[in-house]
Length: 269
Ligand code: SAM
Image 1 (spheres, rainbow, N blue to C red):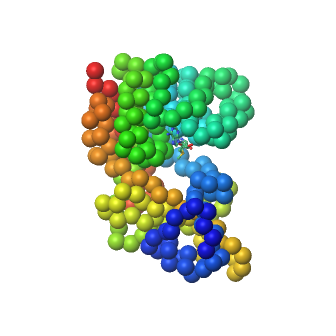
Image 2 (tube, rainbow, N blue to C red):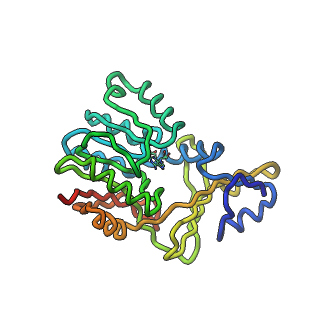
Image 3 (cartoon, rainbow, N blue to C red):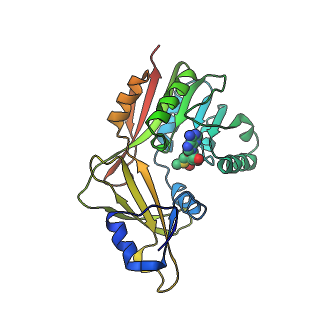
């Protein structure tokens, strides 16, 4: 088995990989080989966009979007007609975002300010009616970085402004979740998720469905670990950081075991 700095996978995924032996090439989902797979799958996931737009529309003033990536949420936010500041850590993502903005219909891209920065420590010298952190990206940060995120967000909320963030509630099963998904390209993927109650991370492993794996040649497999931050825990953590959750909306379920949740928090004054 070839690895590119990707860790061993547990449970059902380990059995599936063992069946293909040394034909397996294991990649991190966010490395060079994995990124196109992530984008293919993410492009079809519109589950939170409607709720995010509805909540943002109700808040006056400019919008700050954190962890903007290549703009999957940025462009719909801009379509609301507000100025949007999009903050993103990775240079490669910032470049993709700038390219998409340049290609957007006239006027839209001009309302967007792109900032390369770290959402756990930023100072933009401005305040916003809505600070948006979608795609459950809060789970990318460890506890210390989340403390920095909350302090930075508080400092950037205008009076009455709200922090809108999504997370996911996961129901543990005795077995691993094994589902098929279709990417924007039409390509099919088998997704295996391993999580047991109390574990800090769930591990997602992605490969072609068994029937589509050729008899010979490499079998590419992509894996990532996602921190589990249940909405009740996150609500308590936000309260401890002076951000009071004032509304909570269920998002369309990604699977029988996942419930997306959008939280709206205001700063204690
Ligand atoms: N919101 C986009 C979307 O829906 O496609 C991107 C979501 S992607 C799951 C998470 C993004 O967060 C990546 O583009 C990653 O580079 C960025 N990111 C990770 N850590 C970050 C940090 N500390 N500050 C800002 N962005 C960060």
